[in-house]
Length: 387
Image (tube, rainbow, N blue to C red):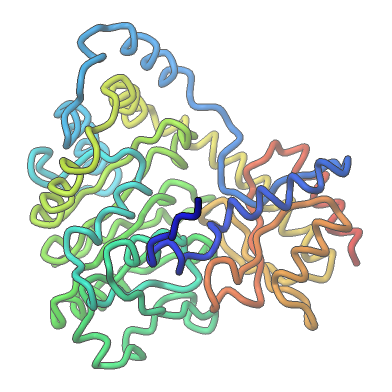
């Protein structure tokens, strides 16, 4: 018996990382010692105090019942406290903070609250695929806003046609950026907020990588900029910051109307995050900064190793000190998929083709620094030998 898929599913390409897993498995089945630098999944363990907090919380029967749709108040207070310490932003935990089952869930569901069929959502390119996918699921039309190297991988708002701007409901931004490892300045955020107010467009900021930096300058939250509370919601996650990708815990903060609308979607779709995970999240959010400094030191070493290897191989990585990705130009004569295929075939190393993140990603590939350092060094040697 054949079943006809919904149109919204038919138009989706294979999810990028699922396809990478398939190709990787083919090589493993052939006996290749594959090193996977494709997916941004931290290899370092979740800090022990967080794990211990989960164990204790999971044993308490009161945590075995339905949680709050919007998150435990104690978790929302911890989020507000972390934002105050980190960004000097004061948030009302009752009106401006909501817990998420990982930021991906919130990002995918947010367009359902505001997008009607025919509405436009402005999606960066190259980008995390979920901005576009969530738009399609909501019946909206994604409009691609290219992120070009000559613009420091920032969107050129003036290049968006006026007729598109007039139909736009949301613009997605993501800095520090996946996949390009670009960062945004306060001037950019100020211009974006002014533009969004003028055109009555919601700014949805994905700030999941704010704590993954290896230089002196700490990335910003858009909410630090005057006027952001009027137009912006920010999505954040404990996944990258505290090595908790499998725990599925994140948050959205900002404009109370936007947060409330997302909450209304969630009350009809999910039943909230397990309280024990939220209690562990509270411990994570209150860890001393020294824990994160140790993490950053690891990524600093790994970035140096890989960047030097790429240069030795005659390649041109984009200079950056944020995220745990290295965004690199492919050599002349190759598409991104062709060159990534060569790296897998000849070096047994999985990388991500830039075109997998959108048309504007063509000409680049992404390397993730989320494998043990000794394996990254081995991958770097293999890539150097491609010359």
